[in-house]
Image (cartoon, rainbow, N blue to C red; front, side):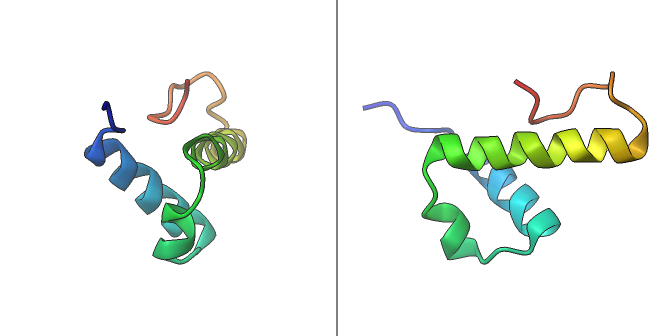
Length: 61
């Protein structure tokens, strides 16, 4: 069985918790694709606000 890398999971949880202030358990209970989607959407907003739409973010796919 292949599992999602633990370091990557921690990055996603920290990212969502930092930007959206959601509780740890709520974030961990999300489906992987939903958690990734939230990371992508927050990253997109961040790039727009910072004026760096062309820069790569760690959560860009």
